[in-house]
Amino acid sequence: MRLWIVAVGRMKSGPEPELVARYLDRLRKSGTALGLEWGGVTELTEARQTTTPERKRDEAARIADALPAGARFVVLDETGKTPDSPEFADLIARWRDSGIRDLAFVIGGPDGLDPSLRAKAEKAIAFGRLTLPHQIVRILLAEQLYRATTILSGHPYHRA
Image (tube, rainbow, N blue to C red; front, side, top):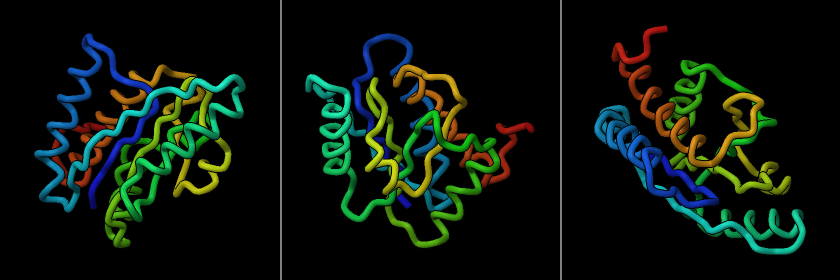
């Protein structure tokens, strides 16, 4: 199964893109033996419409267009469920084992995600109830994707 990230917003220079790259490189190296391939990141610009609903609709349409053909997707949203790391790893393994070929993780813009997009997602996942900048969410997601591979392979990185 190929794993993707589709995010509204671009990583700016600084330590954040380096951390994301570090964890995604580890994911790329550790996931292959588990049937998990790294697909890539698609960054979308923030919408410029006047109203919040218009911005959300525009971003939702562009996110849908950016998803790989036939991909299933998970939205990262503060209203989602908050799994622990082993539960997150188990979700990924179950989706992989069910034959899903492409699984994308969607990070919305500053206004959040349009409800129509959330309704089509496999699941909504939250990294807590706090509102976080997309750069930090991307770091957390990259690390959790790598951590999932270590959990699934029995590697000691995850010590819980």
